[in-house]
Length: 201
Ligand code: MN
Image 1: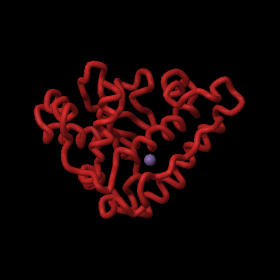
Image 2: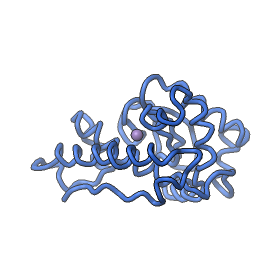
Image 3: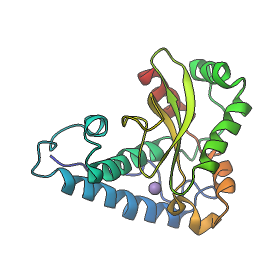
Image 4: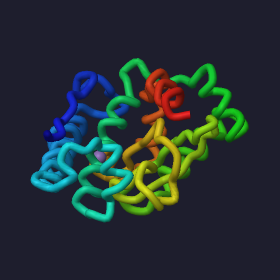
């Protein structure tokens, strides 16, 4: 049993001009492919082989290769899915209500999420997570950590994530991380985020 690199759910150039095709090619074809291959290497021939990625992240992150590459495998799979060429706009239904309850308004949520992404020092991710009962919160993690791992300072089930490693934006945005974060809101697939909300609440 080994993990497979998932296909991108759209063409490399589908998110332009918000995210350029070359960045997507390298990010998916080199970085995500690398995490996937190195995760397989880390678990091959061990008692971790055959376990779900969720199980590995919850119970085996004392192994650094599993932590970094398992996190990279899971985080990027989520990242491709929560973006769409038809994305942007605002959420609706229960998710919109949960965001309003937690932050006061969609604009306040946007400020909190953008701030978490902009102030993550070095490489990492910012997240919107849902807790059992439906409460949502924003948090951020370093490296390829994520909220499914114990003791990251982020909890709950991740429903939206933005990659703020330089490899996610440097070709197009250079050092302008805030511009990339702002463009990310144009491609958020709120239908997918709402699905994850419903499954994690
Ligand atoms: Mn990445």
